[in-house]
Image (tube, rainbow, N blue to C red):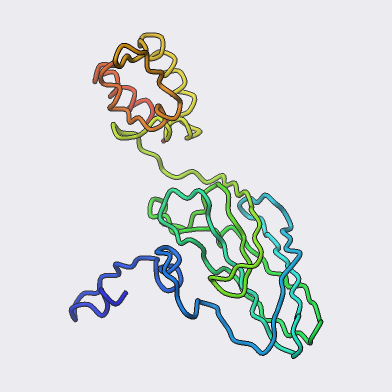
Length: 246
């Protein structure tokens, strides 16, 4: 943030956004001498047997995360066990991982204890301006436990599902993939696609027929169909789809 702070005396631009501290270094893959969460000790600790209370989670659920920590050195000492969350398929800018919990445990040489922490839906959320509230999208998340932000010892995946739907507005730039993945527009888009496929011939390039794959279709915005559908028809389609999203 040193490029933006402290500003010009009147205005401060928070250009770093959420990428402050370890979030910046993780995102840019910049090595540091002492990573966030690092601590010196006169002994060593091992991590094992990480467990999640469930591999699936929904709004309102509480997830319990446990792991065994053992002092494998010759001196007594304390270890700060750190719990991070990492989204695997986010469509908005997110940190590579976010600290969501920590617990300090004292262990004598050879002693082992189980450390347990809890996570709720809010721990997976980001602030969504469309609804002016915190929002946790459905998808796969990785639960990570380690000694420091750059020293993750154990990890496990979790599937999160939410019933919250974000406001969705359709225009000429909306892609087929967005429309097919939204529960309120998917059915109608299937009807439209069937009508389009019946009247459209396979594309030819250099005399060879080029097949339009589902992956290509998913990336196509509505305006790309202007070559096969009149503009008035697409505008009517947009009106009907937006009506479904109300």
